[in-house]
Length: 316
Figure 1 (cartoon, one colour):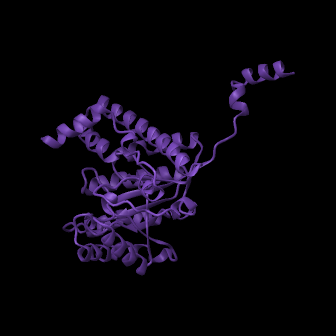
Figure 2 (cartoon, one colour):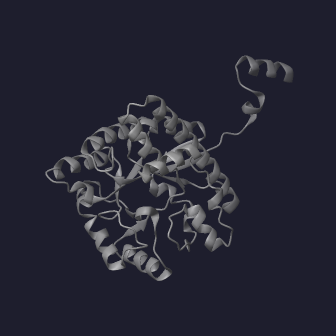
Figure 3 (tube, one colour):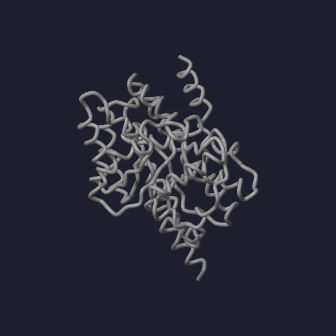
């Protein structure tokens, strides 16, 4: 009987082991920083190209998302209305907008009163656009995910946010898309099709490796896989690869949830005691309060050829 079952499985093209393996259920919230992103950082044509493509892909995969906006990007000469219309597309598609400060300043190097002013100035247009979607949770994400130069500033700013009904938006996975995108945009301009294909492939492979790494790390820290939160940007390389990225995640057992739903995981009640100039994953930050060694250096990096190209670009 067992031999007959094996023959039937082979005929169906399914291995015996995979037929017996339990299905893995994973969840991830998708978050986009620096809206409205653009072709080269602040270009209306890029915003108008990338935004509909990203939203089309999110709809195709039934994936909710939240975008963190820098309102300063809207205030270009004679372009406020056009740029605001791009941002409004996210709201019209059912996505949530969050606060990312007005002009993307770093708390590690910005005086607290000025930084708090950036939050207030940065919510004017986004909260107006979201007015028809109340009630909803207000979220703030620190630019560079830099949460303060010391404990006093960090706690004072968190108190400021709480008084204004904001929650801090953490992340667990970030895939260095800004590095790939800088090279990708230049390759597209140069009409270097071979390089664009190579960059897309390397980018998706790194994203896969990042998910594998942080799945293992969450198991080490909590004895299980937690709800993940992905931080990416609304840029060219994501506009061109998001569909494939989400297909890979779905094949890996992921379904897409809101940030609200992801944060229902009790892991996010863990204290974030990290203080430093960088902005690592919350799975790295939590090692401080849990008394565990930080494994930041073990996190997968872009391939060396990508890093060398990016370094050479910055040197020019």
